[in-house]
Length: 83
Image (cartoon, rainbow, N blue to C red; front, side, top):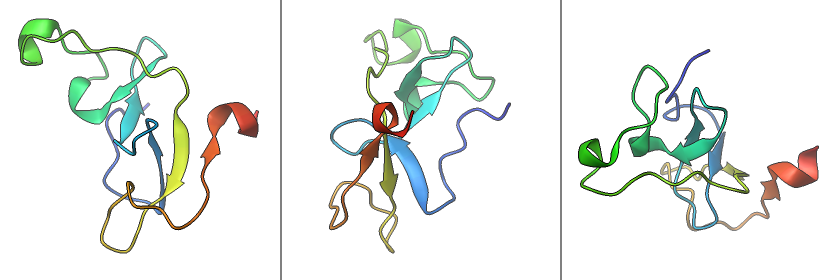
């Protein structure tokens, strides 16, 4: 499995405010900058002293032409709705 791959594609997973998230080896979603390239979650000391928190309801969002996911004109779907 590839971890931390969030740069490409027209749809990405985000948290409720539009920050990109990735699935880690523990099976939970975290903000992309809180997961190492090998898929493990960073420790607090590797993350500016703050322990990463898993995202409960990641959302699939369309990426704007400028790469932004926060200013959406289109509706988004939560992963819970897609199940």
